[in-house]
Image (cartoon, rainbow, N blue to C red):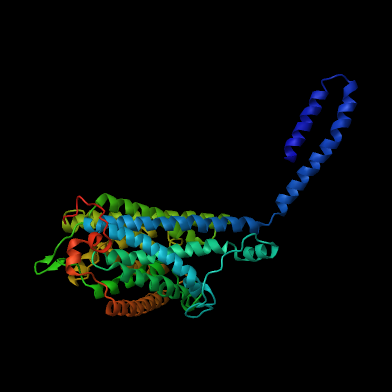
Length: 464
């Protein structure tokens, strides 16, 4: 505003020089106070800009990163819903859609009620945070003291809560796909309550909350183990206790059960791929400096290249081994590449990211049939993608990050496995003993859309 007045005054003075000489003194006399005033305003504005603390700018951009990353990861909930809806049979699509919106909602409530405090409050190198209830949001109408306190954190605490919460829902989504088509709705959601409110937050506190693994030097940048393997171990224990779908494994071998919609599964994969840029990129946790935003950009590139490598490697292996390229396994190859790079998406070179993601594709191709040999029925392939590729990605961190060691990474992997398996077996076992977890054979044959919720996704096409 001051600069505009200044230029207007100069223009007016220039015009006056073209008029009669008798007007010159009057014009100069009239505009001199305005000139001085605008000059003073301009100087004051420049001083104010120079005096504005850099912390304010960093706070704003860091908070924005959490919010943008958070809603991208939230969009992954849609990706999981579409992927699962496409890979289950037509008679179970509505159930998968219902489970995904329900688990996302439960995750939010439980993480607000107890999960966040359990994960981040007062961990101090220990094994869990505080059992205090209800996350405290940023106060409305911040005063000077409140603003100063928040500036010390570097970001809005509400934005941090939102970003951390959507990660919890991701872990629960992994379980949903594995156990599809034969688990009861309410027992599954009851397990989600314990997973999102207690199991995941306690496990997360060990690393991201500043717990004992963090003190040892364990590294998991965005959650190959903390999110994906924890969800994978919970899914594996549930699958073992639940058993396979009827007719999946026979005396003649594995009976294929094709999904309802390959286009829907493909859409879900692309949504997840997009959401992963928020998952990994925003895990930088800051973009208030040139260095931080450059690192976020590097993370984006490595994330994308790892996924692309997972796809290509999976396709080549399938062609070589089976002479045909299975589209569903290729979709999982992309996701396995994404999971693998999640433990360390910043430090690797692009070539290393391609290698890490490519091995994720190899894991999918070789472990999907391995699960079938053990008669572990994983409907969407979540165990190879999230559990095993997550283990690989976590273990290989020292390849590019010299501040870590393979020994400590292995300790972390084993610790998370033991904790999640034991907790999951206890929770699943109690639920199974008290109310049961599996629908009847008749209900499974009919389809859970009809049997459990009474709403069919494709009423004209549910004969199988």
